[in-house]
Length: 348
Image 1 (cartoon, rainbow, N blue to C red):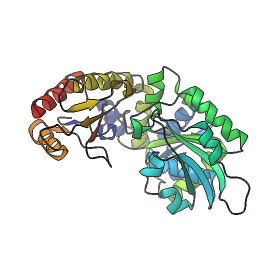
Image 2: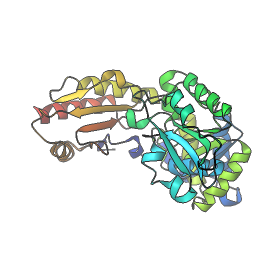
Image 3: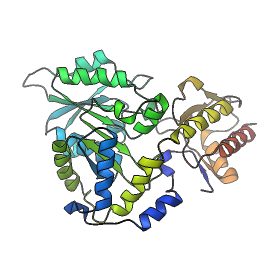
Image 4: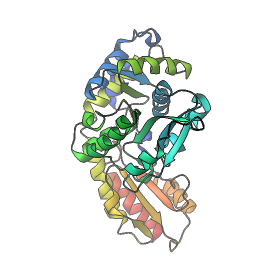
């Protein structure tokens, strides 16, 4: 990648090894469950997370939708964070397509949902109320800085779900980042959950897709939902081939992305007119503010970075002066230094 793109880890391109695997993939019709490469990806992903089965889906949004619709009915309620991706950035799909009611709890700066708030959010058995059926967590919690949720916290939420007879889903788009950041096995972060979806196309560099894992019964129902959502693919093994490389060869190197995020944050902290809280850089996200003292506007900064330096960066959606920079496979230490230098020069 010639351009230095820090807008998201979704901008990653597949590696040369992935492209070769895609070109040589053995394929079949996945709607008939006959694509051997997709079948292998689903089996390997389920085993990696200690679950019975997996389902290849075209995106994390589709995976979350399939999981929630498979475990909730019309008029049921899901408890989730007020800054959760499913609530904020998935087009209201669970309500629009599943007639499922979202009940939000405030996301804390560390990405957690307060346990007492979760307990209070569970509806009583009353004809006036929607029926609470599921709690949904996000790990890492992207909207507050890519914060990883711990094994202990996830188990505590699972205990609440079990106490009230609820299911627990985890939007684990960046679950591998959470695992690497905390030095734990990925399956430890989801062993208490009924379902979890993770992305192949972010830090793991695959071009398309996510995988939903859970029980065989849940996956069977989710497969039906995926078909209704238009997610049944035919010779999708071409995509799954890159996914296999992603989960088997690209996970451990995520630690480099976290190191580069810290390096970027430390550099930004030394530049006048920028403000960054280094203590909040836990994974591959760096949030920083362009202060009112800056000699240029956020729009001008974005324009000059792009036109003069081929660096793509933009304010975080919904914020005028707060930027999110995301490190990934294509952001090397040398490129981090180029970004720091460009910002220092433009803001001088």
